[in-house]
Image 1 (tube, rainbow, N blue to C red):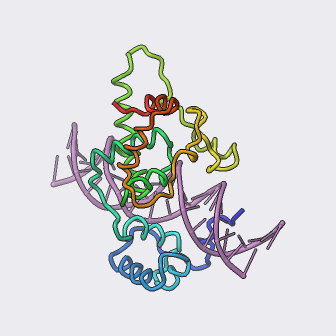
Image 2 (cartoon, helix red, strand yellow):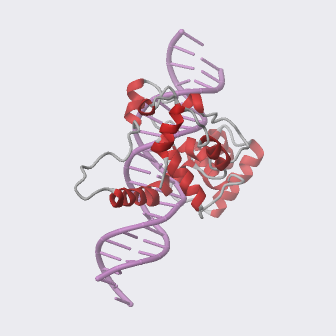
Image 3 (spheres, chains in turn red, yellow, green):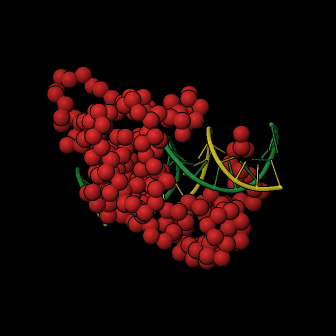
Length: 200
DNA sequence: AACTAATACAACCGCGTTCTG
DNA sequence: GCAGAACGCGGTTGTATTAGT
């Protein structure tokens, strides 16, 4: 087990809080020289007095080329909703299917917009005296812990293993292409899954 | 105009996993 | 194979902004 908060264990007190334009510039220059790896080195070489993980987050979420900011389209929103229904709070996997979007942005968007939207939608659809039911049958994070590893996690509720069906490492194809192909699958299991996942 | 509540989002933290010597 | 360091992920918090009264 790793020591807790290894970056913060440094004696020196690190900068915290919002990044300034000057810091962004320094970080970008440093990454240009040293690459977006070895974040501790980047943090040291940049002279920013920021911890490595803070530099990594800033780079991945804001400074990295091709990062899209804001204006999540209806198509993207629909895709997020579908993927969340399939995958639960696996933001990095969801983000992996939305080119230019980051896990942090999707997570924030979900928490501030979509979760409420879906709750309202569910309430509208529900009969007034219908007993309340969980919004999703997806296992949550605690279940990963019980089973030992996140990656071994399977979707028992749907009788399939998500990792058998998705090639998450595939690069280049857009999320929308992928999801369209996915929903065209016509096996018996998928017919059931499609019923579960359909957002109307 | 002033205050309060709600919302949005950037950033931090804890913890599990992977990498490296 | 082991221990410590580094990384990556998801949950949570802090704060700026906007809306409502």
